Image (cartoon, rainbow, N blue to C red):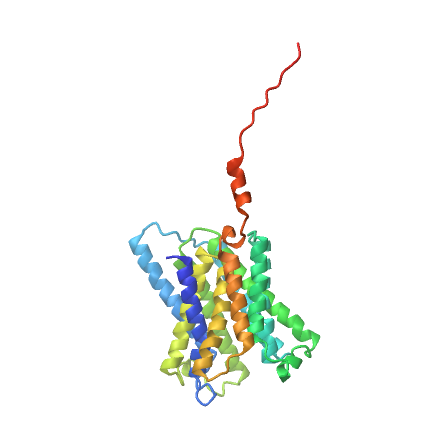
Length: 335
Protein backbone atom coordinates (compact mmCIF):
# COMPACT_ATOMS: atom_id res chain seq x y z
CA UNK A 1 0.00 0.00 0.00
CA UNK A 2 1.46 3.36 -1.02
CA UNK A 3 1.84 6.03 1.65
CA UNK A 4 0.08 8.70 -0.41
CA UNK A 5 -3.06 6.55 -0.61
CA UNK A 6 -3.08 6.18 3.19
CA UNK A 7 -2.39 9.91 3.59
CA UNK A 8 -5.30 10.80 1.29
CA UNK A 9 -7.62 8.45 3.19
CA UNK A 10 -6.46 9.99 6.48
CA UNK A 11 -7.23 13.46 5.11
CA UNK A 12 -10.77 12.45 4.16
CA UNK A 13 -11.51 10.71 7.47
CA UNK A 14 -9.99 13.49 9.57
CA UNK A 15 -11.95 16.15 7.69
CA UNK A 16 -15.19 14.32 8.47
CA UNK A 17 -14.48 14.08 12.21
CA UNK A 18 -15.61 17.58 13.07
CA UNK A 19 -18.63 17.31 10.78
CA UNK A 20 -19.77 13.99 12.28
CA UNK A 21 -19.20 15.31 15.80
CA UNK A 22 -21.36 18.34 15.04
CA UNK A 23 -24.08 16.16 13.50
CA UNK A 24 -24.05 13.91 16.59
CA UNK A 25 -25.32 16.81 18.70
CA UNK A 26 -28.99 17.39 19.44
CA UNK A 27 -30.03 21.04 19.66
CA UNK A 28 -26.39 22.01 20.15
CA UNK A 29 -25.85 19.58 23.05
CA UNK A 30 -24.34 16.13 23.46
CA UNK A 31 -26.83 13.54 24.71
CA UNK A 32 -23.95 11.18 25.47
CA UNK A 33 -20.87 11.43 27.64
CA UNK A 34 -18.24 12.71 25.19
CA UNK A 35 -15.41 11.25 27.31
CA UNK A 36 -16.62 7.75 26.39
CA UNK A 37 -15.94 8.33 22.67
CA UNK A 38 -12.10 8.28 22.81
CA UNK A 39 -12.27 5.32 25.23
CA UNK A 40 -14.41 3.27 22.84
CA UNK A 41 -12.19 4.36 19.93
CA UNK A 42 -9.12 3.05 21.78
CA UNK A 43 -10.92 -0.24 22.51
CA UNK A 44 -11.93 -0.50 18.84
CA UNK A 45 -8.31 0.03 17.73
CA UNK A 46 -7.08 -2.51 20.29
CA UNK A 47 -9.57 -5.19 19.24
CA UNK A 48 -8.96 -4.68 15.51
CA UNK A 49 -5.15 -4.69 15.95
CA UNK A 50 -5.39 -7.86 18.07
CA UNK A 51 -7.45 -9.53 15.34
CA UNK A 52 -4.94 -8.55 12.65
CA UNK A 53 -2.05 -9.71 14.84
CA UNK A 54 -3.71 -13.09 15.42
CA UNK A 55 -4.30 -13.46 11.69
CA UNK A 56 -0.71 -12.45 10.87
CA UNK A 57 0.70 -14.97 13.36
CA UNK A 58 -1.36 -17.75 11.78
CA UNK A 59 -0.30 -16.86 8.24
CA UNK A 60 3.35 -16.08 9.04
CA UNK A 61 4.93 -17.98 11.95
CA UNK A 62 8.00 -15.71 11.81
CA UNK A 63 6.05 -12.62 12.89
CA UNK A 64 8.38 -10.60 15.07
CA UNK A 65 7.02 -9.79 18.54
CA UNK A 66 9.20 -8.30 21.29
CA UNK A 67 7.68 -9.05 24.71
CA UNK A 68 10.48 -7.87 26.99
CA UNK A 69 9.23 -5.42 29.61
CA UNK A 70 12.01 -2.92 28.91
CA UNK A 71 10.59 -2.61 25.39
CA UNK A 72 6.89 -2.78 26.28
CA UNK A 73 7.14 -0.09 28.97
CA UNK A 74 8.20 2.48 26.35
CA UNK A 75 4.69 2.39 24.88
CA UNK A 76 3.17 3.97 27.98
CA UNK A 77 5.02 7.25 27.35
CA UNK A 78 2.81 8.49 24.44
CA UNK A 79 -0.28 8.03 26.62
CA UNK A 80 1.34 10.07 29.41
CA UNK A 81 2.31 12.83 26.95
CA UNK A 82 -1.22 12.98 25.52
CA UNK A 83 -2.67 13.07 29.05
CA UNK A 84 -0.51 16.08 29.91
CA UNK A 85 -1.31 17.65 26.53
CA UNK A 86 -5.07 17.38 27.11
CA UNK A 87 -4.75 19.14 30.47
CA UNK A 88 -2.59 21.89 28.93
CA UNK A 89 -5.26 22.37 26.24
CA UNK A 90 -7.93 23.01 28.85
CA UNK A 91 -5.61 25.34 30.75
CA UNK A 92 -4.86 27.29 27.55
CA UNK A 93 -8.56 27.82 26.86
CA UNK A 94 -8.94 29.57 30.22
CA UNK A 95 -6.65 32.37 28.97
CA UNK A 96 -7.45 32.62 25.23
CA UNK A 97 -10.60 32.38 23.14
CA UNK A 98 -11.36 29.52 20.75
CA UNK A 99 -10.27 31.39 17.60
CA UNK A 100 -6.89 32.32 19.08
CA UNK A 101 -6.44 28.76 20.35
CA UNK A 102 -7.09 27.29 16.89
CA UNK A 103 -4.61 29.68 15.27
CA UNK A 104 -1.95 28.95 17.89
CA UNK A 105 -2.51 25.25 17.28
CA UNK A 106 -0.83 25.66 13.90
CA UNK A 107 2.48 26.05 15.73
CA UNK A 108 2.56 22.27 16.02
CA UNK A 109 3.45 22.14 12.31
CA UNK A 110 6.74 23.95 12.93
CA UNK A 111 7.45 22.26 16.28
CA UNK A 112 6.92 18.85 14.68
CA UNK A 113 9.45 19.66 11.97
CA UNK A 114 11.98 20.92 14.56
CA UNK A 115 11.66 17.83 16.79
CA UNK A 116 11.66 15.66 13.67
CA UNK A 117 15.06 17.11 12.81
CA UNK A 118 16.51 17.12 16.34
CA UNK A 119 15.40 13.75 17.71
CA UNK A 120 15.03 11.58 14.62
CA UNK A 121 18.05 13.14 12.85
CA UNK A 122 16.08 13.53 9.65
CA UNK A 123 17.54 16.22 7.42
CA UNK A 124 15.22 18.62 5.62
CA UNK A 125 16.28 20.73 2.65
CA UNK A 126 15.91 24.50 2.63
CA UNK A 127 12.97 24.20 0.24
CA UNK A 128 11.26 21.76 2.59
CA UNK A 129 11.71 24.13 5.54
CA UNK A 130 10.20 26.89 3.44
CA UNK A 131 7.31 24.58 2.54
CA UNK A 132 6.62 23.85 6.21
CA UNK A 133 6.57 27.56 7.04
CA UNK A 134 4.22 28.12 4.09
CA UNK A 135 1.93 25.36 5.38
CA UNK A 136 1.76 27.09 8.77
CA UNK A 137 1.02 30.43 7.10
CA UNK A 138 -1.63 28.86 4.85
CA UNK A 139 -3.55 27.11 7.64
CA UNK A 140 -3.35 30.24 9.80
CA UNK A 141 -4.56 32.48 6.96
CA UNK A 142 -7.59 30.27 6.40
CA UNK A 143 -8.58 30.64 10.07
CA UNK A 144 -8.06 34.38 10.45
CA UNK A 145 -11.28 36.35 10.27
CA UNK A 146 -11.74 39.87 8.98
CA UNK A 147 -9.93 42.52 10.95
CA UNK A 148 -13.18 44.38 11.43
CA UNK A 149 -14.36 41.58 13.69
CA UNK A 150 -13.86 41.33 17.42
CA UNK A 151 -11.91 38.06 17.13
CA UNK A 152 -9.13 39.88 15.29
CA UNK A 153 -8.58 42.23 18.23
CA UNK A 154 -8.81 39.46 20.85
CA UNK A 155 -6.03 37.53 19.13
CA UNK A 156 -3.41 39.86 20.63
CA UNK A 157 -5.21 40.68 23.86
CA UNK A 158 -4.66 37.41 25.75
CA UNK A 159 -2.40 37.20 28.81
CA UNK A 160 1.17 36.02 28.30
CA UNK A 161 0.32 32.79 30.14
CA UNK A 162 -2.08 31.88 27.35
CA UNK A 163 0.59 32.20 24.66
CA UNK A 164 3.12 30.25 26.73
CA UNK A 165 0.63 27.44 27.29
CA UNK A 166 -0.21 27.49 23.57
CA UNK A 167 3.44 27.00 22.67
CA UNK A 168 3.74 24.23 25.29
CA UNK A 169 0.67 22.52 23.84
CA UNK A 170 2.20 22.62 20.35
CA UNK A 171 5.48 21.19 21.64
CA UNK A 172 3.72 18.36 23.51
CA UNK A 173 1.66 17.47 20.44
CA UNK A 174 4.81 17.36 18.31
CA UNK A 175 6.72 15.38 20.95
CA UNK A 176 3.99 12.73 21.13
CA UNK A 177 4.02 12.31 17.36
CA UNK A 178 7.80 12.21 17.00
CA UNK A 179 8.19 9.78 19.92
CA UNK A 180 5.51 7.50 18.46
CA UNK A 181 7.38 7.44 15.14
CA UNK A 182 10.56 6.56 17.03
CA UNK A 183 8.77 3.63 18.71
CA UNK A 184 7.28 2.34 15.47
CA UNK A 185 10.62 2.39 13.65
CA UNK A 186 13.05 1.39 16.39
CA UNK A 187 12.75 -2.31 15.51
CA UNK A 188 11.13 -4.65 12.99
CA UNK A 189 8.27 -5.74 15.22
CA UNK A 190 4.89 -6.34 13.64
CA UNK A 191 2.88 -3.15 13.18
CA UNK A 192 -0.12 -4.85 14.76
CA UNK A 193 1.86 -5.89 17.84
CA UNK A 194 3.10 -2.32 18.25
CA UNK A 195 -0.50 -1.11 17.91
CA UNK A 196 -1.67 -3.58 20.56
CA UNK A 197 0.85 -2.13 23.01
CA UNK A 198 -0.03 1.49 22.17
CA UNK A 199 -3.78 1.02 22.40
CA UNK A 200 -3.66 -1.14 25.53
CA UNK A 201 -2.12 1.73 27.45
CA UNK A 202 -4.38 4.19 25.62
CA UNK A 203 -7.47 2.26 26.77
CA UNK A 204 -6.19 2.13 30.34
CA UNK A 205 -5.53 5.88 30.51
CA UNK A 206 -8.89 6.75 28.95
CA UNK A 207 -10.64 4.45 31.41
CA UNK A 208 -8.75 6.15 34.23
CA UNK A 209 -10.12 9.48 33.02
CA UNK A 210 -13.68 8.14 33.19
CA UNK A 211 -13.08 6.90 36.74
CA UNK A 212 -11.65 10.29 37.71
CA UNK A 213 -14.66 12.09 36.20
CA UNK A 214 -16.94 9.88 38.31
CA UNK A 215 -14.97 10.70 41.44
CA UNK A 216 -15.09 14.45 40.76
CA UNK A 217 -18.86 14.38 40.20
CA UNK A 218 -19.46 12.43 43.39
CA UNK A 219 -20.91 9.50 41.40
CA UNK A 220 -24.14 11.45 40.93
CA UNK A 221 -24.63 9.87 37.50
CA UNK A 222 -23.55 6.41 38.62
CA UNK A 223 -20.47 4.54 37.49
CA UNK A 224 -19.07 5.17 34.02
CA UNK A 225 -19.84 1.67 32.69
CA UNK A 226 -23.51 2.12 33.58
CA UNK A 227 -23.87 5.06 31.20
CA UNK A 228 -21.29 3.97 28.63
CA UNK A 229 -23.74 3.82 25.71
CA UNK A 230 -26.34 6.27 27.00
CA UNK A 231 -27.50 8.69 24.30
CA UNK A 232 -25.58 6.92 21.53
CA UNK A 233 -26.98 7.17 18.02
CA UNK A 234 -25.82 5.91 14.64
CA UNK A 235 -23.94 9.18 14.12
CA UNK A 236 -22.19 8.79 17.48
CA UNK A 237 -21.02 5.32 16.53
CA UNK A 238 -19.76 6.75 13.24
CA UNK A 239 -17.69 9.24 15.28
CA UNK A 240 -16.20 6.35 17.28
CA UNK A 241 -15.38 4.33 14.14
CA UNK A 242 -13.96 7.41 12.43
CA UNK A 243 -11.73 8.26 15.39
CA UNK A 244 -10.53 4.67 15.65
CA UNK A 245 -9.86 4.35 11.92
CA UNK A 246 -7.84 7.58 11.79
CA UNK A 247 -5.72 6.34 14.69
CA UNK A 248 -4.90 3.13 12.81
CA UNK A 249 -3.99 5.09 9.68
CA UNK A 250 -1.73 7.41 11.69
CA UNK A 251 0.14 4.45 13.18
CA UNK A 252 0.63 3.05 9.65
CA UNK A 253 2.09 6.38 8.52
CA UNK A 254 4.37 6.49 11.58
CA UNK A 255 5.67 3.04 10.64
CA UNK A 256 6.06 3.39 6.88
CA UNK A 257 6.14 7.16 6.25
CA UNK A 258 6.83 9.95 8.77
CA UNK A 259 5.39 12.74 10.89
CA UNK A 260 5.59 15.34 8.15
CA UNK A 261 3.23 13.32 5.95
CA UNK A 262 0.80 13.14 8.88
CA UNK A 263 1.09 16.90 9.45
CA UNK A 264 0.22 17.61 5.82
CA UNK A 265 -2.71 15.18 5.93
CA UNK A 266 -4.23 16.72 9.06
CA UNK A 267 -3.62 20.28 7.86
CA UNK A 268 -5.27 19.67 4.50
CA UNK A 269 -8.10 17.88 6.32
CA UNK A 270 -8.78 21.06 8.27
CA UNK A 271 -9.10 23.02 5.02
CA UNK A 272 -11.34 20.33 3.52
CA UNK A 273 -13.56 20.49 6.62
CA UNK A 274 -13.94 24.24 6.19
CA UNK A 275 -14.87 23.83 2.52
CA UNK A 276 -17.43 21.10 3.28
CA UNK A 277 -18.89 23.15 6.12
CA UNK A 278 -19.72 25.91 3.64
CA UNK A 279 -22.23 23.58 1.96
CA UNK A 280 -23.37 21.55 4.97
CA UNK A 281 -23.83 24.34 7.52
CA UNK A 282 -24.47 27.30 5.19
CA UNK A 283 -21.28 29.08 6.18
CA UNK A 284 -20.02 31.90 3.99
CA UNK A 285 -16.69 31.26 2.23
CA UNK A 286 -14.06 33.89 2.96
CA UNK A 287 -11.18 35.30 0.97
CA UNK A 288 -8.84 34.07 3.70
CA UNK A 289 -10.03 30.50 3.14
CA UNK A 290 -9.26 30.60 -0.58
CA UNK A 291 -5.86 32.22 0.01
CA UNK A 292 -5.07 29.61 2.66
CA UNK A 293 -5.93 26.76 0.29
CA UNK A 294 -3.69 28.22 -2.45
CA UNK A 295 -0.76 28.68 -0.06
CA UNK A 296 -1.14 25.13 1.31
CA UNK A 297 -1.22 23.67 -2.21
CA UNK A 298 1.99 25.54 -3.01
CA UNK A 299 3.54 24.19 0.19
CA UNK A 300 2.47 20.63 -0.66
CA UNK A 301 4.11 20.89 -4.09
CA UNK A 302 7.29 22.44 -2.69
CA UNK A 303 7.78 19.73 -0.06
CA UNK A 304 7.08 16.56 -2.05
CA UNK A 305 7.98 17.50 -5.65
CA UNK A 306 11.42 16.48 -6.97
CA UNK A 307 13.93 19.36 -6.91
CA UNK A 308 14.22 19.41 -10.71
CA UNK A 309 10.52 20.29 -10.88
CA UNK A 310 11.00 23.25 -8.54
CA UNK A 311 14.16 24.80 -9.96
CA UNK A 312 14.23 25.57 -13.67
CA UNK A 313 17.91 25.41 -14.59
CA UNK A 314 19.08 27.21 -17.76
CA UNK A 315 19.65 24.95 -20.74
CA UNK A 316 23.34 25.83 -20.80
CA UNK A 317 23.78 24.82 -17.17
CA UNK A 318 22.03 21.48 -17.73
CA UNK A 319 24.20 20.74 -20.78
CA UNK A 320 27.45 21.71 -19.09
CA UNK A 321 28.32 18.28 -17.65
CA UNK A 322 27.81 16.63 -21.05
CA UNK A 323 30.12 19.10 -22.83
CA UNK A 324 33.07 18.48 -20.55
CA UNK A 325 35.97 16.71 -22.22
CA UNK A 326 38.76 14.84 -20.58
CA UNK A 327 42.05 16.63 -20.96
CA UNK A 328 45.33 14.78 -20.47
CA UNK A 329 48.33 16.81 -19.39
CA UNK A 330 51.72 15.32 -20.19
CA UNK A 331 54.44 16.29 -17.83
CA UNK A 332 57.98 16.43 -19.23
CA UNK A 333 61.09 16.47 -17.17
CA UNK A 334 64.22 18.11 -18.34
CA UNK A 335 67.27 15.88 -18.86
